[in-house]
Image (cartoon, rainbow, N blue to C red; front, top):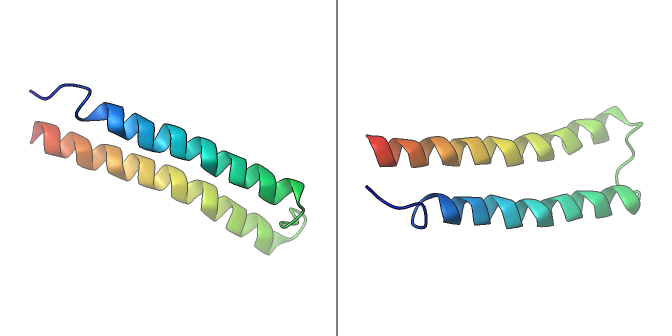
Length: 70
């Protein structure tokens, strides 16, 4: 059995630290008014960014679980 330092710690670091930078990027986008949330198209793509991040977190977690317990 592998330890947490070899499997989940890198996962948590990748999406924890990466998530912080992603969140900072989203805040900068909103504060600089690069996205107008009144426009449907902007709301759609902003949602795609957020959904995409969580999609890859879940996908990576599932693949890691399959690799560990298959």
